[in-house]
Image (cartoon, one colour):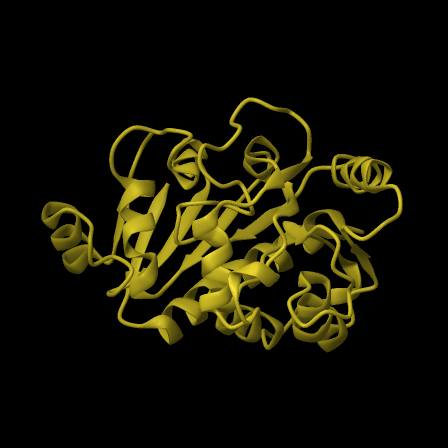
Length: 261
C-alpha cells in the first residue's frame, strides 16, 4: 500500500482524481473499456467532482458498479447511493453501462446474485473506496467477513455506522437509518487491479490509524487494504493526525510512504 499525504481535502481530491483518470484512460487505451467501482459518502464528493471534470476520458467506454446500498429505500430517496451516483457521476459524464444494486427489489436475494454475476464477469480495473469512521470499507462494519468469496453481501449496520449517516446529514435521526445494507465483500474489493482510497477529514483519523497500524484484522476492516499490492490511500493532515509520530513525520518529509501487510 502506498500512503500519500496532502495539505487539505481539496488537494487530496485533485491528486486522487488525477491518478484515477490516468488509470481509466490507460485501461481504455489497452482494452477499449474500463470497469470501475464507485464509492459515495460526503468524503468522496470532492474527488468525484474532480474525476468527472478530468479531460480525455471517453466515459462511454466506462462500465461502473457501486459498492453498497441501503436495503429497502428507493432510488429516489435523498440518501440512496443510486441517486447520488446518478446525479454526481452517471448523468454528468454520460456513462452508458451502470449496474445498480437494486436493494428495494421484491426478490432481494435474486437482485444480489444478479449484480454479483455482472460484477464478476470480467476483471475490475480500479475501485474507489472510502473508510468509515468505524473503520469499515463499503458497508463491511467490524468485525468484517474477510473469508467469504460472495461478491455482494446483505449486512447488518452497526450503531456507529448508522450514527455516521446522521452526522453527515442524510437522515434526521438514527431511527430513520436502515439497519441493513447490501455491500460488496472485502475479498471482492481486493480483486480490483487497483484501489484508490480517498480519506480526508479529522473524523476519519481514528479509522486511518486502525487501517495503517497494528495487525490486519476483522475489527479494523480497512486494514485488509494493506494486503493489496496496488492500493493508494490519500490522506490530508487532519485524517493523518492520529498516526504514530514516526509515520506522520516520515509522511510530512516524503509526502508518500509504502506500508506492507
